[in-house]
Image (tube, rainbow over all chains, first blue to last red; front, side, top):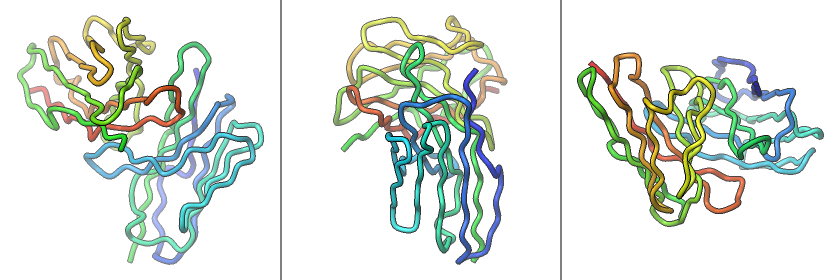
Amino acid sequence: TQLLEQSPQFLSIQEGENLTVYCNSSSVFSSLQWYRQEPGEGPVLLVTVVTGGEVKKLKRLTFQFGDARKDSSLHITAAQPGDTGLYLCAGATTSGTYKYIFGTGTRLKVLA
Amino acid sequence: GAVVSQHPSWVICKSGTSVKIECRSLDFQATTMFWYRQFPKQSLMLMATSNEGSKATYEQGVEKDKFLINHASLTLSTLTVTSAHPEDSSFYICSALPGATDTQYFGPGTRLTVL
C-alpha cells in the first residue's frame, strides 16, 4: 500500500513566522501536487511538480520535489492568517491504473 | 477554465434510500474522473477511478455494489450510494482529469448525511 505521510499534522503559528510542511513516501511518483482545502470545499491546486529536484515558487510559497521523486516540501515565508487551511500533497502513480494518493494532511492555523 | 461542478452540494436522506451525486466537467472533456470521500478532519481517500465508456476501478475495501459509478459521457460521472446507512455520511468529492495531464481539478464536494 502506498502511503504519503505529512508532517507535522497540526501547526499553529503567529503571523509573520516561517514554516515547512513535509510530504514523504517510500514510493516514486510521476508527479506531485500540493493543494489547500477550506472547510466544506474541494481542494484547490497550488502547484504541480514533475521533475526530481524541481523547485517552484508561488509568491511566499516554495515547493520542492525530492531528487528521487519520493518526497516533497512546502515552505511558507512570513505566514499570514489567510494561509490558514488544510494542506494536502498528492502523488500521481502509474503502477496499475493512473491515480493519485493523498497525503495525511497538515492543518495550519496562522494567528494574527 | 478547468471547472468541475458537483450536484447536489449537500443532501440529507433516510437510512435505506439511494442517493445519486453528479460530477460534471464544465469546460473540458474528461476521460477519467476520480471519486473521493473525506471524513471530518481527515485527508481524502480515493474510492474509485471512473473511466468514460468502461467499468470503474474500485480501491481495495470499497464495495462496488454499494457505490455505483457511471461515466456515460466525457463530461459527466455519477456516484450512487445505494441503501445508504449512517456510516456512509461523509464529504464526497470528485475530480476530473483533462486528457493526459498530471493535473486533476476538483469539484466543490457533496456533503451526505444519512439519518
